[in-house]
Image (tube, rainbow, N blue to C red; front, top):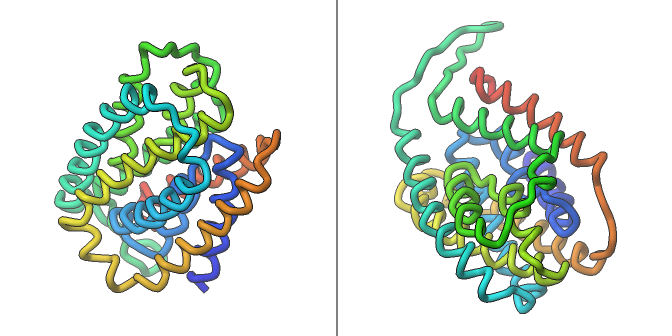
Length: 257
């Protein structure tokens, strides 16, 4: 059943990435978190996200703008390394507290609390998209790259910040999407390189068929999304998913998932 759920979510979320500020990882991460520890869920989501980006590069990567890649991408890569290292450090911290409810034991860890806070924060951003209304200039691209890369490395949440800073970079729709895909790929490669030292070894080999299935589903969604790339918005879906993210964040923060 988990195969079916994860693949369906990967397919639909990958389509949405062509029209919205939501990334594949933002939606897929909570689903993985239902079945795996949060640090493993982040890593497995990162693998699917990376290979989906590699496929999207063949579709839209040629439209990326080199100057924006340099100003935004270099700080993003550096910060992604720092964020990923912080995630590894958080996974080594002891359990904060534990409790029993309905005959089951639940543990609250620091990494769960941190990721829960980030999930809630980015969900609120989707409900009140004030970032999209902020007038960031081209000179702010390195700052945006650093912030996007850091949170991408820590939790995989990079899309909202990246979109907010790139939206005013004077790019066409095609160049905006192509540049975002290339930068996202840089961040994914960096964080997966760090995760591989610890987290991926603990979860990838045992769940390789699931990751491959989710990756194929995401690539299929990316293909259809590219074909459907028109003036389509998903405001209602944004709000529904954001509310669900808040609920999942609370469950994560209290140790239920």
